[in-house]
Image 1: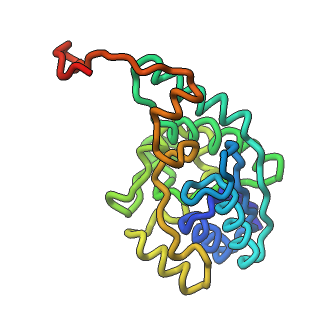
Image 2: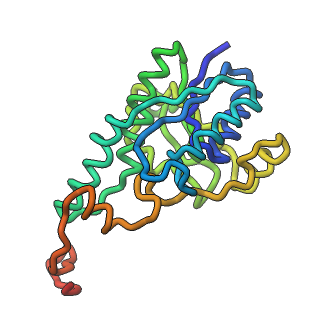
Image 3: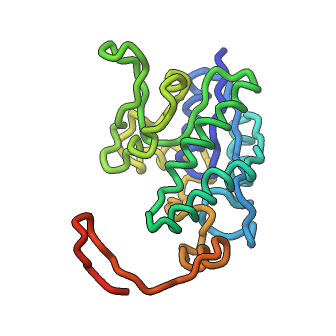
Amino acid sequence: MKKVLIGMSGGVDSSVSALLLKEKGYEVIGATMKLWESDDECVEGGCCNLNSTMDAKRVCDVLNIPHYVLNFKEEFNKCVIQDFISEYKKFRTPNPCIECNKFLKFNYFYRKAKELDCKYIATGHYAKTEYSEKYNQYVLKKSNAGKKDQSYVLYNIPREIIENVLFPLGDFESKDQIRKIAEEHGLLTAKKPDSQEICFIPDDDYAKFLINKGKLKSEPGQIVNKEGNVLRNT
């Protein structure tokens, strides 16, 4: 039986992904990454707080699979939070989820899977992997979920590990299908709302975060397009 370490965020997508993997005969191990220290560990929303971790554990209990919490706070701060602040200092808009995928989910998390003797890692992303005769290797592809597809934030998965990455939701066309499966199996995350904010800024107040954590100061300036035209003075 092949072992797989699946990232459990405490949401419905990763919950159903774990269920589907178990139904397919994999030996499934659930793991939640502890990425940052919230001022309020019980804050609603987000994917890295205490409530979400406990939801992931409860789902794993229902599925009768082990659940671990992996402390990656130092790595997350270095690779994601500091990059986020640094990019704003350079007047660029960062995408922390892409950095998290690159450095945490498909690097440190994959290393932990190897330590646990797992052949695969899995997540609840809407994407696919398959072998390409054209490129003579495994490749990342779009899922069947249309606008819900998330392959665009996974483009930087290292080529050499793609064949060891599983996306159980790749063939589904809608989130409603996933919620229905969760309801049918009595998973408590079935009706849990989607988390779309940046996990380490749960109140969505970027300015306050950058001022408090990044020591940035708001200053007047110009918004300029690629052609050098001033669009707005601020």
